[in-house]
Image (tube, rainbow, N blue to C red; front, side):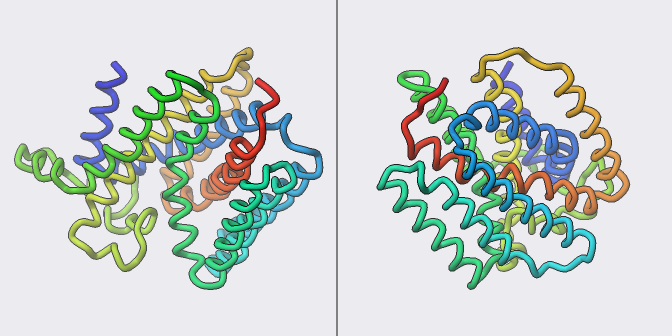
Amino acid sequence: MVLALVLFTAVACVVWPLATYTTTLAVLGLPHVLVELRYVQRRFGHRLARGTAVSMAGLLLLVIGLRVGRNLDGADSTGAIELAAIAFLLLTVFPALGWRWRGASLLLAAAGLAAAALSPAHALLLLAVAHNFTPIGFLAEALSGRRRRNALTVACALFIGVPLLIATGVPFEVLSLLGWTAPDFSLLPTGPLASHFGTYLPPSWRGEAWAGHAFSGAVFAQCMHYAAVLHVLPRLQSGVRTPSFYGFVALATAGLFALFFLDFNDGRRWYGVAASVHAWVELPILMLAFGTVRTGP
C-alpha cells in the first residue's frame, strides 16, 4: 500500500507537476507545519534552556514580522535581515553544544551572514529547498541501530534518489509517449507551471529546457516531506493523541485553503509566514539534537 502511494505520487509529480504542487501545498502545507512544530516542542522543548528558548522566540518573531510586513506592503527587500536572523538562530544553541559543534555553528552562522550581504535571495531559496530533507535528520536523531540504518536508506532513496531520477526527464519522456502528461493542469487558479519555478529554481535556471523536470523532482521531495512529517514523525513519539489539536489543524487548514482557492499567490504568501517559522527553527533544533548528549526520551 505504501509503495503504491509513493509510486502514484511520483507519477503525479511527473504528469501533473503544477496540480500536485499547488494542491498538496494548499491541503497539506499548514497541517505539516503545525504537526512538526508540535513534534519539535514535545521532543526537544525540555532540552532548551530558558534563555535559549526566549532568544529563539524573539528571532522567530522578527522573521514573522518581516514576512507579514512584506505581505502587506509588497516589498521584497527584507531577505538580508531574515537571513541574518537565521544565522543568529544557529548561535542560540551555542552554549549547549560540544566544541566541534560549536565550531560548526560559528561557520554556518558566518556563512549565513556572508550570504545576507552577497545574495540573500539565492541563500533563502537554497535553504527552502534543503528544508525538504530535514526529516532525514529527525529520523537519524530518533532511531538507532538497524531501524535507523533501514529508515535512512529508504529516506535517502525517496528524498534524493527518486527526485534525481525525475529531474533527468526520463520519466517525463516515457509518460509523454503514453499521452499522460499535462504539466499546466491545475485544480486551483494558479497560472501556468513556469510561473511557479521560482519556488525551487534560481532565475538563471528557469528558462532552461530541464527546468520543468527539476521542478517536478523538487515537488516529489516536498510530498515526501509532508508524508514524513504527518505520518512518520508522530509515530516516533509516545503519548496520547489529542483530538482538540487535530480539530484546530483542520479548521485552520480549511480557512487557509479558502484563501488559496480565491487567490493562490496570496495564500502562498500568508502560508509562508507559518512555513518560515517551522523551517528556520529546524536548523538550531537539529544542531542541538546532534551536538549534545541526549538526556530525554
